[in-house]
Length: 121
Image (cartoon, rainbow, N blue to C red):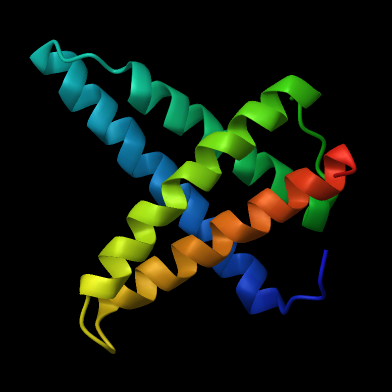
């Protein structure tokens, strides 16, 4: 994986933590309403895998995920990127939302790259 500054690594980890927290909060609300949470659960799991892979790559923390789980998470994470890019295109230059989206996309790209590196792709 490319050489990254400590700041980029920290922002990427925080971006994943934030996205995970948002998904967990959404899951609670959806469960209260009786909504189907299957897609959200898959995204939440993929985000957790992405975070674990980045922590493994940068902090040498082990993760419990199999190659199949990594491959599935990679597909889901890659599928999130177009939505982020569309939101980014609609956001105002210099806005906090745009900054958040930039960091989220960068963190997803880095997690996908880390999964590829881990799986030898």
